[in-house]
Length: 515
Image (tube, rainbow, N blue to C red; front, side, top):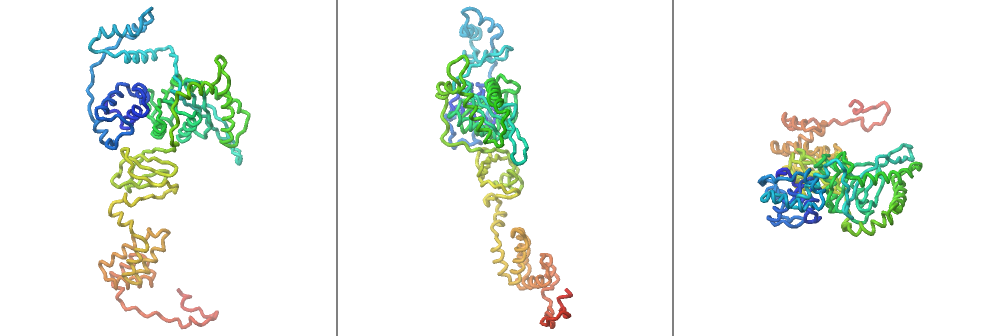
């Protein structure tokens, strides 16, 4: 695989699994769907550059890693000849013939260009697994946790409406002892999927080295037989618990035979038992699942001593790693594009980012309380999460300079400016600020009025506002016409006194009756 084809996320995952998870190059390659040789290439290059730890030192940001690792051409090596595997396999069946002997003969034939013994064994194993007969898998204690969902669902009845909703049954099985975890969730969506993993780890009380999930949509963003892309949220879970994720290939149930058998056992020993019971909540259903799960794991083996629980506690649990000190917090990761107003949209609410990132793609990490925004793996903004649909969360430092100056204006500041130009200017501005649901909606028209002071004296502007208030001219255009036609300078007729205003009689209506 050429260096250019590896993403930055996958490169950093190689370094994390190497130096933090302490996995072999073969397991790292399997987890990330790349060859062990590619893993070795980048690990060796990292050593030459002084990188032998995780997390990375602060000097190694994404830009520097991209330049040093991904933009460097890798010289192709000369093809190494392989043994004829059909002859190799048939000769291996001969009495006294070993793989070590056949490898030595292979080296003699290819003295200057050959594979090492471990490499040859790995390639032979891969070739053998592709042959028609199935190969029995032997699982080490504490190494793999197999994940899947049951096909059938269990109905939950809404006590108010009587409607049914099918609950999904999540199943996790340890590879070494078949120790099983199961729970009900309302869906197979990403949050339910991830949090079921968290509860499975808490049930086990420890962490395996590898998770083998199905190639379902919640686990992968692109289902592929040999190179599935993990969902970023799911990958963050793996980083928190320091586990490797190796999704099963589509339409290859043998990749997760343990999970398939675990699902079958859960369907028989839990779901079949519950088929005549009625549940009105997810909590009630999970309480019954937990009770039956204890019976399933303590059910004696038919041909071996003990049960799943005793075998797990004796052999598998000591081989696993302890739970992390800090609890996992679900964080949904979403790729979003910065709009022209330097905001991004998350759940129909808008959050600001630095205006220099217009039209760039950023990652939004959404938790229960915060929204963190990342560009090239650098945190560029952080907001408190809001559920107000259509609302905006804007930080002043994210705005351009001109917008920052505009944002500093307040109703009190506008009133103070208007009061310096005259009493009637202040009344006109005050009316505008109170005429809208939000004062900010009146800022533009107020700025337009106050800027007229650059052209007209404050005496004329004040007189124009007085005439506009008397005649109901509350639009900016009304004030401009008064000033343009010099109506503010005309001598105004004194207001007529209503002589009948003080007379109270049913037959006397007064002048206001005709307005």
